Length: 374
Image (cartoon, rainbow, N blue to C red; front, side, top):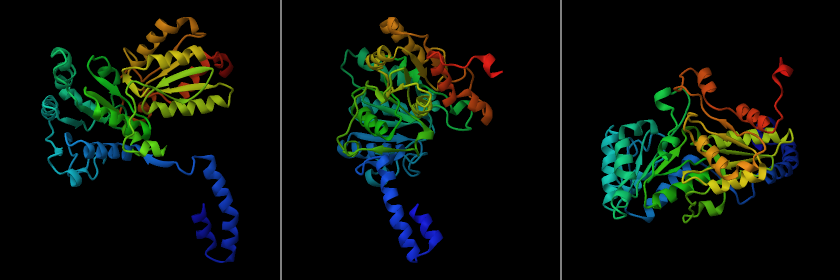
């Protein structure tokens, strides 16, 4: 605002008068947003800082994957780490997910803490034998004698215009497997706190990021910026409190749910938005407590509907809180087709804000009859 005034008015006396009038308004605008102590951080910087701090604190932590070193990461998540920690701890690998994932699991067997980056989680299919049979099952099969402290991280789910082989959400796939923990950050706070927790955890962790969130900025407190900050695995976060309906979701869909909740509030519907954060373990207590308060549930996910995260949440609520429901549960998910490449079809295949709004209205019996819109 002040820059625009300078460009238009130059540097004369009139500019001084205008700036004196604008500064209180600018201060008031800032006060309406975040406190003076609040800072903003992108998800990309949150991930980078978490990697940096954990590598600095523990020499057994190292990063490996395609282009993580010299190129500083396909999405610049590992920017500056090669210069700081050297090629022994930031390892560029050949294009062989099966190869470097197996090396990572073997290193974890020996007490190191590898962070394996997949350029996209679609490529983790090349390494799924190591992830499931070598990493996830070893602690159980060894009667607790072998720990596998390894993190598998990278972008997951739909980006934009990258086709079916680069757009799948693997949350439900990996959440199906005992021995794995599956985390899905949304905000910078999530990314920073959950990645630190994943690196410190003694078990294998699937860390599902979202490419479209890397450049998003979020307010972060001084607590979040502290090097000791860490979020508990298995605990959801209520992003917005409400009393009429519960919306459960994760990753990028949290933002969509919050937008839907804002639209619904203008129509008198108070929606509670739960950011799951952790898919396995799932915070069933938080979900059921919310449903027992609101008496309605809408689940939202980007992945395929069949055998999905929403289906598991629905079953949990039916088992534990069925008598509290005042309406059938609504489940919003991606279309049950491989992701189309065409932009118009891609948009139809991924849940949108309007889909969430309509589902909430249905469970609140506020939907407009089809005949009324004809």
